[in-house]
Length: 423
Ligand code: ATP
Ligand code: MG
Image 1 (cartoon, rainbow, N blue to C red):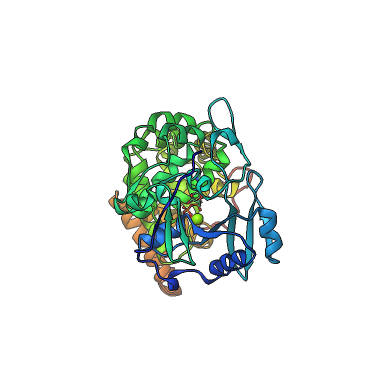
Image 2 (spheres, rainbow, N blue to C red; image 1 turned 135 degrees about the vertical axis):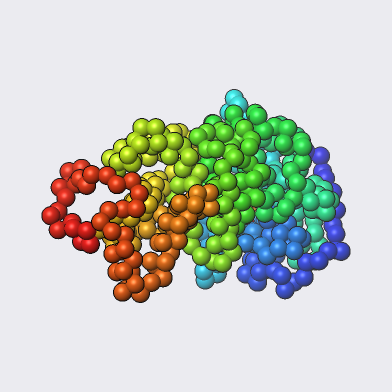
């Protein structure tokens, strides 16, 4: 690559108090040992957009080994490209060595996918191997300057995501970059340049070749970073969504609502789980199977049909077992929450998935008055004191409100004679 002179900009809104003191310490120490070091990537981008960065990454001329020798509390991680983690109490600063992105240093397979990338380079190399122009900005803490090799500042001003280099090539190297574009567009409110959007079809196909476990990681970042609703709105009606979630209905409003709730929970620091989103994304597929093959909502078939729905999804994105079980349990509880069999109420309240299943029922209630009144009943029950709860359960009468069916023991588990109405 020919030498490229960056532009250096001192006129910007970043002030020292915005910067993480541990990241500053890393840079200062590297400088004292004679290495170049800069803040880079997401933190510079977010600061320029007036957002609080989630973490501060450092890029340096020191090799990983040299970084390790500079900091006692550090270790090297990563196989494809080692980076150093420098630890300050609970915080970890990621320090990566400038590396080359030129294609002759990458080992690609016959579809152009990167399989190995091991060459170190200089700062310009490092800038050009990054994905989006807005992700390739450096901050020089000694001169208080932004260092821009790729026109990233212009794109920040234009609020636009563009790849560095040829979009077709960059997506062939790593189609997950398309999902990253969606994530950053959602988070920053930026537009995705047409030169990227034009490749939606071939990207959808290429994503099939990406290990489904990496796609799960990206799924988490897309939908559990606080901007899931926006990300889903961008993604849902594209061939990429069909490739990732083939059985998901792109027009489902339930999904938008769930994404919205998840974002709000994240904003309030409440816990969120991918299991809930998986339950939502695959709900229509599961409930269509169930309506067709198990109109009586029998528990045995529900289990099997849930597994069928999940198995189809697993072929595209790995869902760790605990989350697929979570989704299945949420689905299994739906008919039981609706039926409200008096003898089951207390057990349901104590079920470890009760809260999630109740939240799910509440979401569904927005589109169905009967479900809404059922969800309201459960809400009232949870708010009620012991006596009032007893009254509410008593008022349900002998059977459930809906869908009475002959009481039978669960498979392999005979019904106990003590299972009376209020048992
Ligand atoms: P976030 O705020 O979500 O952490 P980020 O920009 O820091 O955003 P990371 O995934 O942490 O995103 O990656 C750090 C930097 O590494 C990016 O800014 C980008 O420069 C570079 N990078 C990450 N993934 C890729 C990729 N697949 N291809 C090229 N460059 C990448
Ligand atoms: Mg980051």
